[in-house]
Image (cartoon, rainbow, N blue to C red; front, side):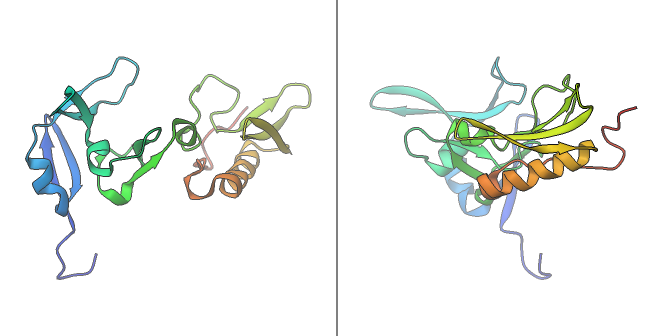
Length: 177
């Protein structure tokens, strides 16, 4: 941020949560009553409002309200684990399948907690793989788990661009004994 300039976003309070939005959206958002909704199939709560139309009352999420995605697409926060950030540069419009490419590995009970990495029990090597257009591609076998994760990251950037998930690799994380 440049000193002397005001930030182009603000925070609003929805329930017990602070929500970041662009200042230009504040007036439009203020015309509605927003609330927290906890879906049974998700750990993360959603911010919604009710909108009346000619076909009745329907609930709409804050992201969908702001971005107005075309049919078949949804609105998701780019940084999905950093709280409620609904600034437009943090929202991405994509299909559910495209969104799956951006998420971290779901099941932590596997041989590796990195996405696209598994331990080959027969060779005792770490295998990197990625699925592109429904086809699984083997990226190679590696002596270290972090090397396999780095290979997955490179392939994810190649095939999915900036929206592809990138494993966060640290030295102490995921060491096998």
